[in-house]
Image 1 (cartoon, rainbow, N blue to C red):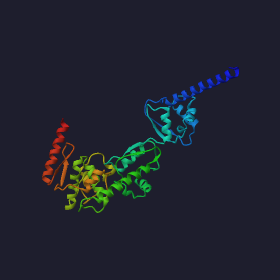
Image 2: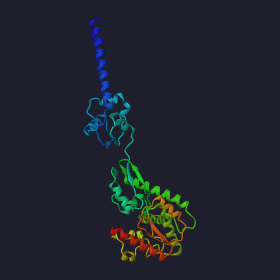
Image 3: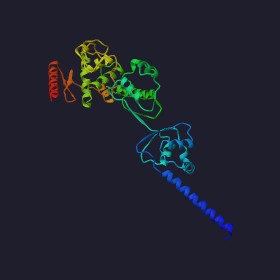
Image 4: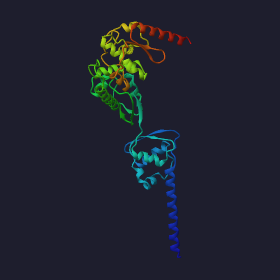
Length: 339
């Protein structure tokens, strides 16, 4: 073999070895695990190119430093179509799976739970603290929220459905409230259409108000329809509802954790020891179960109920029996406190 041919063959062999080595190095990088030992939230800014992405991933100690990152994106061009967003990186992911995630555009989902039985002001407080939310509401005043939703301030309480809502980073606060409001509207419409006959509600708002009272009075699922029956029975005979949660709501920030006789005797629009009928609006955000209970109350003759000290309530049909149940509850409470 001539010297030129030997040189050519040798060169080809060296290039082949170099190519094989490069390919191996690229595959090694692709399969290398991320340098994280726990779940990590990573944000890829809009307009980020390959060079900046590589620098960012390395500077944040997410991937090992390597000269093969650029070549990897050329060998596997589908990995180079990364999209801006906020992503959840999990322990055990590789460089390839990271790039596949960025190319998929499947951003991290964050949960926000709106709890049934809470007031809107408590929800707004939780919303204000939620991570990665874009805050567009200048404050948490009802007037501000109502204006953004194109509602009246007195339409807000009870108008949002309690549930866990998932959102991506940079979701606007008002967007989550709109979702919860639409969900409640749809739910209430459906419950209202299927309600029992001859209930003393003038409109859907009255049903939601009743449901909010049920929500605040009991967390025992099998009691909800029975609590509803007590309130319905009282409304039908013109008896005042006399429910403490409405008094507490009417007191606003003046409530310090204990109701006094003076509180029960102080007039407010929501003091059902003084006013007749339902209060002027909901006192909390009711869940689906309480809405159903308000729409389908149990048929009973009960007019009273009191806590039984075991997490539930004792229901009675007359004042004498109710007073005995109250005494039994107080005795049980005293014995519990003395232990």
